[in-house]
Amino acid sequence: MNVSDLALYGILPALMLAILLTVARLLRGPSLPDRVVALDLLTTLGIGVIATYAIATGQAAFLDVAIATALISFLGTVAFAYYIERTV
Amino acid sequence: MTDVITAALMIVGAFFMVMAGLGVLRMPDLFLRMSASSKASTLGSGALLLAVAVHFGSVGVTTRAVATIVFLLLTTPIAAHMLGRAGYFVGVKLVETTVIDELAGQYDLRSHRLRSKQPATAPPESDQPQV
Image 1 (tube, rainbow over the protein chains, first blue to last red):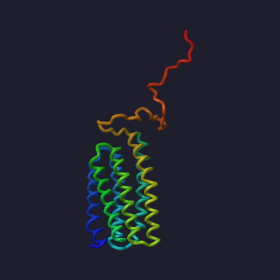
Image 2: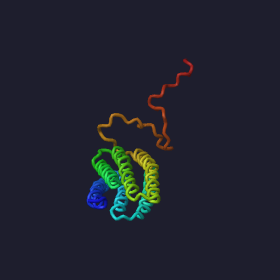
Image 3: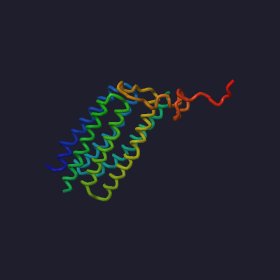
Image 4: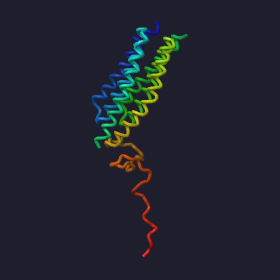
């Protein structure tokens, strides 16, 4: 069992489990900041999925997508927090 | 040897990612959920990106992975701070077993500034002349 098999059959299902737990909180979340926390965690989990998929396929070019995802996630969370605070 | 390090880093990263998801689902409070998600997800994605850097082992991939890790380390606390502050202003309920809320009454709700003195226990004016 080499590293790409471990990434494909071991790590990616664990990340899928984490994504399912986070989506449950995104659907349940009693308040709006709860859902924003779940969205932020979903994009961070997406960065982990991209990194694992880069190892599984041997394509290092996926890391550029991870950088762009991190940037957009930060901007989205800051914008959400700014407008939530402005509603008071 | 490289494969062993890569596998160990990936397993550690996946473990912390699952812990972050579990904490976000199971914690009773917005702030406890943020405490679970921000720290564990930063550590988990950092370990996975380090695994990528070790696995490919070239200068370009390592530079991009380290840049992503540094960017996550810089931005995740800022996002968590802004979101927690916004949640506190909106009035998200704390969990019932909270012992003390030291921010209660400290924020000025008009200007969104933080004060350091408690207005309720401020000493009365004592320099007025006694009549």
